[in-house]
Length: 96
Image (cartoon, rainbow, N blue to C red; front, side, top):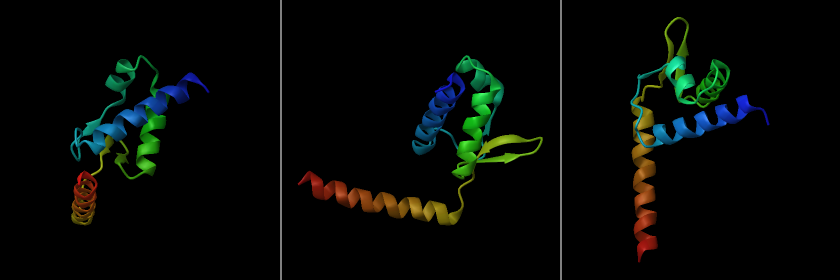
């Protein structure tokens, strides 16, 4: 596995974790330069990670604007709330 792919995978995991934990708010820009510096890498793995997240509809890429965390629409918020409620019920049942 190439170093570029390894770094891109690490970036994907980190951002997926941060998005799941709501550490990255909707519409927040994600910049290549600071991320590349943080991971001591070139821009190639950062762009690979951005493309992966865009394919998952977790970020939105716009020409000349860069990449931003995808906004949450009403449908998505409702789905998240329903999933959380279902998981809480399961957690309560397992606790007994």
